[in-house]
Image (cartoon, rainbow, N blue to C red; front, side, top):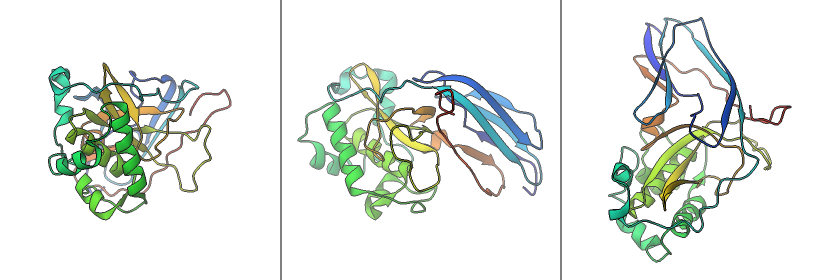
Length: 260
C-alpha cells in the first residue's frame, strides 16, 4: 500500500452452521490492531488499518464437521409467496449480481414445468452445472449472472449467482454462501484450492444447501458468510488503494479427523 488503508476481512467460520469451531489463530505481519464485529447478515468480520507497505494476513482453524453429506432436500416443499416469512422476501428480489427480473421469462420457460420444491431447485442446479463451464479467470468483480449466462463459463461464484437468479425468478428465496470445502471422500482437484461458493434455498420451514458448481451433496462444508450475493460477503474489502499480491487457501482433514 502507498498509504494506510482500511480493510475488512471475512475468513472466520460462522457459529450457526453444522460445523463447530475448535481452535483458531489469526495473525498479521506486521502486527496491527483488529476490530471485530458481526455484519447485517450475522457474518463475523475483522476490520483493520493496513499500514503503508506490505501486509501478510494468516488465519488457521481446526473445525469439527459431521461425517455425513449435506441434508437431502429432494422432498422439501416450495412455499407459496404469501407463506414465505416476511423477513426472507428480500431473498426473492434482484440484487447486484443476481438480476432475476431480467431472467424471469427464461427461468419459467426452463423450469416452470418441473415439480415445485426440492426437485425444481435441483433442476436449476442440473441445468447450470451442465450448461456453464467451470473455468478460472473467466469473470471479474463486475460479472453478473446475466453475463455468465451469455458467456457460458465462470467460477463457482458465477454458477452460484446464476442458480440463485433462476430460483428468485421462480419466487424461491435463495441466498449466496461462501466458505471452505475440503475434498473429503472425493478425488482432490488438480487446480489449487480456493474459497468455495454455493447457495442456500428456503424450502418448507428451513434453508437447504445446493451446490451448482459440484452438483453433489458433499461432506465437510465450513460456512464463512451468507448474503444476497457475493457483494455482501467479500473475503477482502479495501477502502482505498491496495494491490493484492497472492492468496493460499487450504482445507483438509487433520490427523485427529477434524477439518483444518
